[in-house]
Image (cartoon, rainbow over all chains, first blue to last red; front, side, top):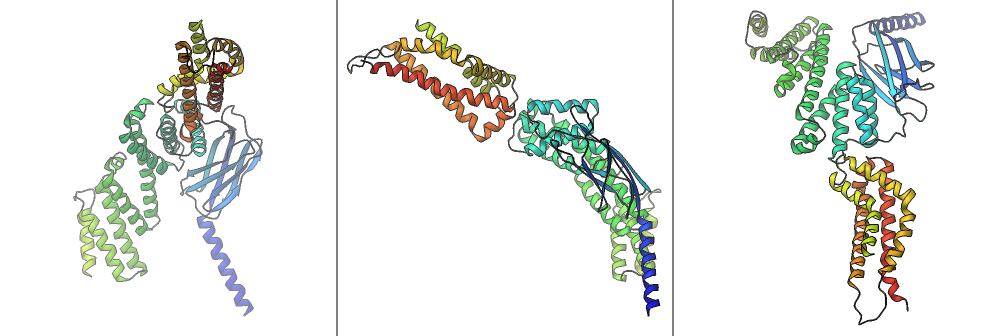
Length: 334
Length: 146
């Protein structure tokens, strides 16, 4: 009995270890924390990185913070919580990372501001120079501080129009240039500002903001967001998570019907997405049949979904729609 | 002499007039107007350095045109009436401006030009309220003398 128990625990331990090794990710993180105005390194801050639900403290060496080690699972996002000593403000930064790489390398320059800094018109104007110099994290730190201190909208005046537009621009820049996970936030804010622009156009024009500026922010951020979504779908497909890949693509098709330009800008046509969704469902049905993991009814549902998506596409030599539809018909008849 | 009194009052009211002009040009402080910053600096300088000097200058001038005697059948001189009206108008203007600046919405807007500007506007309008009320009382109060 005792032997059996020991054998059983050894099996569980081996399984656990092999799972961990299979999904473990190695992290190599290096950050410098600086005050925004003078650029001096900020020491004695507490930096925590959250990788796939596991929090790790970064060790400090004169204003530079590092972590090298493993986490138990693959990560596609790193969240940094920065808690500097007074009088500086706290920060939270979300970073997109490629989950396929064995070692996630992140090298960040994080900026903090003095909490007592007044958020005024001059403060907002001062921050716009960071955009011109390509200092995107500085611009983000600057306007993130302002928006946290002042709140998003309280009044439709120059101040709030500038604050929100510059913040949207900062979110967009760090999303597209520094891989921060701020794309969806930038899109939401830019769309809200576009709605506001249609009602109060002269107020926006007075501070030099055109509709085109806001449209560009929304479009570019959507473009970046869609690239991320599409690569996520490809990852799921490669990993054999066909249903999840198909569902994600179906969501993208819905988005593309509302904003086709955001997808065509990255070379994704509605037909291409429909082929991806259809093939994903077809592969899901094949996998289900092979593994006998789901009922025949569910497999038929997958095949019907695949048929539905593929029938919308105009067949040509490249997309192999005809062949796939023929396969689907044949398997439905079984 | 009357001309000089109005000139002195005009100079004395420069910060108040600039604040009013700033409020108009910035659409009640909704847009960023340089005049708001200028008005803030003028108000601050006035409060710090010139307030008492102007008080010293204006008191005798206002006194000179106050109601001279208290007799029921005697008309108040036209010049004095004008002066009282001007003082009353400036008093009301200061109160109105203070009301705007201290209301939550506009206070927030002025604060976006800096706490210093808000403080200067607030302090200078309160000082004007007190100042104009004193001169108003002074112009009337002389009539109670025997």
